[in-house]
Image 1 (cartoon, helix red, strand yellow):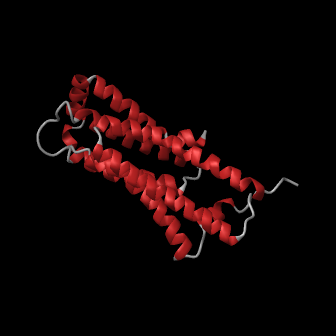
Image 2 (tube, helix red, strand yellow; image 1 turned 180 degrees about the horizontal axis):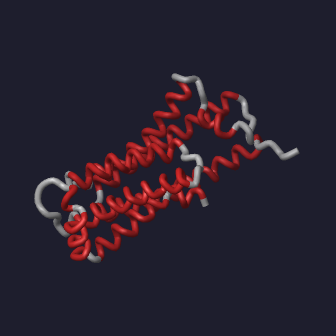
Image 3 (cartoon, one colour; image 1 turned 60 degrees about the horizontal axis):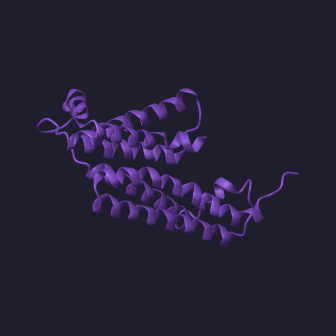
Length: 205
């Protein structure tokens, strides 16, 4: 359930883009009515409007997501804060410059921020982030924690590179679909890891 909550803005981005792509005239009208004050230059074209509308809706969804957690006095994960900041910055640049280049870079920057956090924790602060989060449920030797952290770093780097390849080698519509479907990679990756970690899980007393 938490996973669906975390990725809700991405799902909304996909739905709003596909609807805007299907109804380009309506998307253009909405974009010019509601976003024209936030963009530089002339009015928005029918080709630009779906991605700009989808980006604006995603920013609003991300703000609502964070606000909901804060109002409920719930903890906001560091990764959720990072995602919120990146979508706000890159999404705002996408709208202002009416260019999808910025929003296409957003997933890669997010993945690489995660990879950098793991690297800095491991080698600069001498603190394994995975161990910090999971050591109450799992007891493993330090070398195993280090290897697991390295696996996550590789995962984030590869996903970032894959996003760049799809974003700038295929049409925007293909990239938007990839952006949604790539979400499935994370739970699959986690499930595969669980088989390895099972022998280390502490049984309840």
